Image (tube, rainbow, N blue to C red; front, top):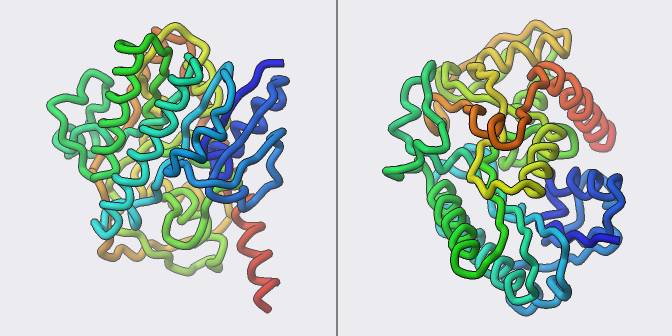
Length: 325
């Protein structure tokens, strides 16, 4: 039986990835600072530990795994990434994890390792026009990410690819674009826009106003988690090292996103625009490279994923309300 290690298995994407790999018949070890908050892990072995600790990483990477998926990072939504208050932690923690995991994999002769980078590494100067952002893979340089989170992602991309060149590894690098779905963070400040808006609308009554940071005209694309997993696994098992975008090309404004969710919920919602951290004005995946290299690209409509996500978050909101009553 082939064995796989999932770093960040207690997180949103990692938890879904463990389930997918188990369905494919792999023996799976998961590792994270915490168990999954919203679902029982399906991993054969789950280690609760800190990947910043070299000795812990050596214990976890104790064999030649057939595949390693490195998703662990210090991250969150705009309220966490763009205030500047968490920059040192974000850079130190994520870089340390990547240095530790990659070197341990190399020393155990684990060739095939996947690294989840982010669209946040793209230059801010190419994302000032909300209607025409440029996020082609070859637009990454001259580098100018809009956050320290993006700078760390760019550094780590280069780290993984340098191990390919110098040590004969087979790292694969994907640039994720706003992955969303059920069983992810939906409250507390680290949630991203789809989850935050689903929560606000689930709590609202028809006719209520919900708060939107900025004017709501900033654009993004959002990729449902199942398609993220498909792209991740296809890339990992391909001959292409990347970096490559894994995201949707269905770009919407944040105002449009809110209205789509309100429509899913069957509610009439007003928007109250307030000051808040925004990030770049426009960001959208560009999928010509993934189509060329993998013969596949995401195709699920945004609304289909929002229906599944809203249903789950609405249940969480109501469950919490009952527990608090």
